[in-house]
Image 1 (cartoon, one colour):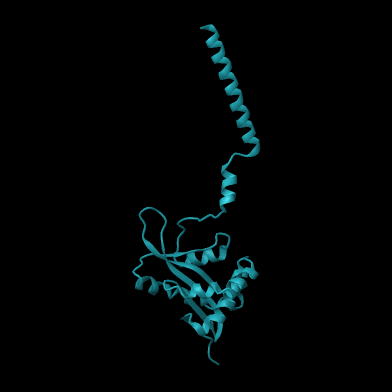
Image 2 (cartoon, helix red, strand yellow):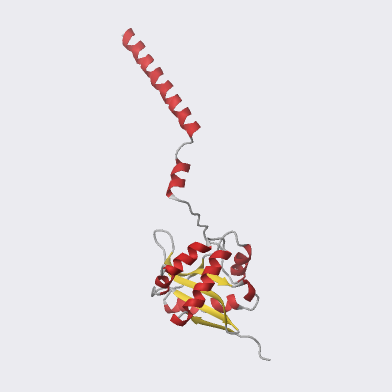
Length: 192
């Protein structure tokens, strides 16, 4: 009996159904809304993303079965003066296919992609809450650079504005200061 093999290739039209199935599975595994992911597939958003020239989408099979995928694309590092890097946006291996070297086989395609694009840095976008994934990337030589935190505009606006109690206290203090200033001016004008 031959040993099962891991094969990795860039996603082509024939692979799209397998990729979309794995992508929906990955959204579900990371706690995102499965219905939303299915809608993105149905609306053609995933197809559009696959057709972006700069995006590298790689599919892995294990013993002929779809097992995982990797999505990478060039990205400018944040800051005023920054260099571009190849960012591994998504790396996913189906739970039943793990512990067979599939993630490493997928990542083995990344250095060549980076070199062909003239990029000297490779960045992995890893969810902070997934310790196993963070450890995996750390064992491969990835180090922490920054933590990206996300919010909505409305939430940020609410957190930046004073709280209702503090806002009332600030208005009360301002009113008292105006009253004291007016009394002081009245006394000064009466005296003089």
